Image (cartoon, rainbow over all chains, first blue to last red; front, side):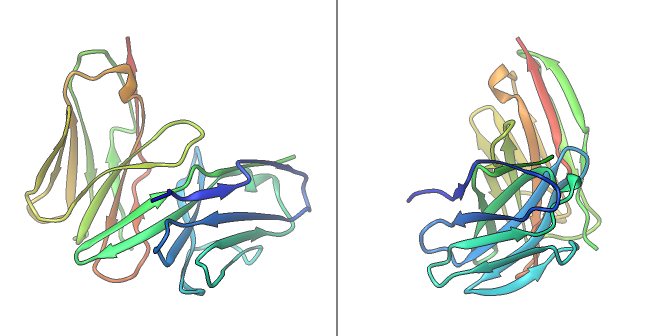
Length: 114
Length: 111
């Protein structure tokens, strides 16, 4: 099976712009989670989508939004970018089976806001 | 709120040394995962432990899940430079709630 893919890998934007990131999960996985990773804060959960519905949401402002399509691909949008939004954005495909709950991460999108 | 505390935060050792990193919580988890992340890349799953007291080995890496399923440890024998990276633990409960991640242990193995 192919792994989780994310596009683009690198992105440079300026303050006030908006950005859309894309994620394709592992085939057959219906859950996609998004995380923001910064050196100081570690991995912070943004939101999770399951079968096109947002199932969980982290503590981020409304500028961060997402959606999931019928083929399980997901997009994340950040509007009115701020310098502090510079981070590695990770997408993870989630597999739940019995007592096991495992996430498989993509390579991430490195966003730099100037 | 469930929290996972990882220790130490940073570890720098010489090639060939042994080390142990810890992942502790006051909460019970139904399973726990360990990941390794290299700079600029996403975390890569190393192992999932499910049963209290479970021990899993992956070559020179030994993972243990605490009897009460609240903590875990990762032991590396004869560390090599290729083991360098950020080691993250993540816990799951029995519902569809988000995984809880620790802040990680950054390991540097010097040749």
